[in-house]
Length: 630
Image (cartoon, rainbow, N blue to C red; front, side):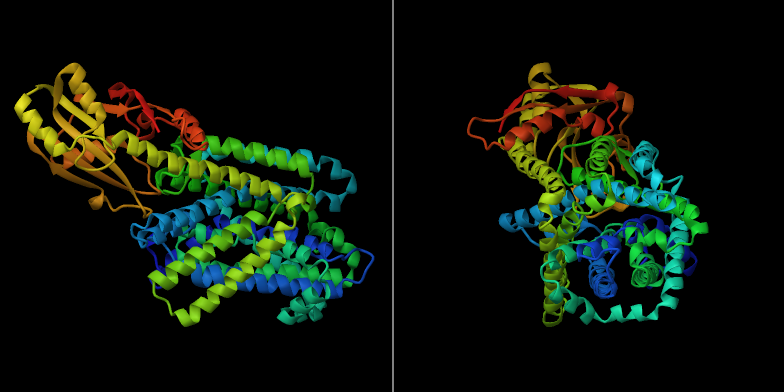
């Protein structure tokens, strides 16, 4: 039984510990490294400094962080949104697919939901650039605590670590993934232990558990309340990963890992840093590393390096997975996607995405130079994505799952209002660096919307005047064309249609193959397809077959596998006698076409061809071209 099939009540106890530790290494890296910078940046945003008493600021901000973790992560994601799974899978595209399944054929509503889903994915790409930069920088900055002279080397060491991180992505996480969980387990225990020691000596810090401390602190600091909230949100970044990575481990292991290990250890560390700042305001330069005794600084620094690398790797892998799903759903052009594990569907590598992310992360490090400056750019993408999750999940839970409206409309309204408060607070950091994730997300969203719209126009132009298969077969009977040995495979967008490639072949060569397969590959709005529901065959006269092949949006199409399935179901074929006819037309925009279709035309010309994408053997592929105006 796979992890995606294990519900909370069904998870085997023998598997739970393994899945729980595995989840620590993949799911919680981002939020687990937030203590490196979140409290420090938040206290400084409130006006706190080394020369001032910090107790009011510390208690107020600790209260805000605590209740943000409780409301946004624990209640919204762990308790509610994780129940909106698409056959065990989570994430913005899985949630979008769930909503689209229930909307019917209303074009306006479907477009609205599609835009929301693509916007959430676009914001995730912005986050996947900032997370590696700020996480690794904040860890390496611990060198300043050991010796201020080492500050000159922080940028160089950060760039070396980032280069190594992106260089090994192509090998996949399968081989090294088994050590991620234990390392993060040690990391969380270290966080909790460091904080516990300081809290025991300063129990007054527990007053921050009272939410009124946070509310009154904001009211008393209205001039900087926006800056405070914009920094506090750094403590919940990574919370959306609990939902996005649900398919790898199942809901129960992630929920238990958060409630039993991650949440308590994070609170202990934040409260420990707060207690330290109350006792020694000068520790504001780096309260995280100041928690550690001098003898433990080097081991903690090494552990922080590994934790931030793991956190960054998880976000980068998430970007690969999002790109893979976007290709399958038809939201972006086809890309070369390589699966790095034979056991895990979600482990993929996308070289073009890897290069773009690497260049973006390096540019961020060289531009902002330290984690404190980079924090200004962090938060907008995360809070935007969280708000979209809340909107889509509220519609699905209330309108589709039929949750009690009188109870959950107020609950979702409060959660969405909280998302909006954090989002607006971060928008005020636009000129300080917040423009960056918005620019990245806007570019990605433009590509997606241009591709979706252009693809619809292309399909209409290519197939709008196609010949009906039934009529075509009656013509064949009358004309009796020459049939040559072998099998011809043609790709079609739906049933009962004759592809232009077949018509061109018949017109110019005056022949048809002995067996003709009209193949329609469909990517369903579910993550995976059961093998016995993969393929459907409809035979016709004259040895014509309509073939429907279904894939989930997290699966990879493979033509050789399809041909083996057909052979097993009685449609005999031999690879050496099979030809695959692929249409590869040149798309040209009409003079009256909207400007964004020029972007679609460019993307269409440079995208991965169908031969490579469907893994069709090159020696058996025949590409037929032409011009299509859209």
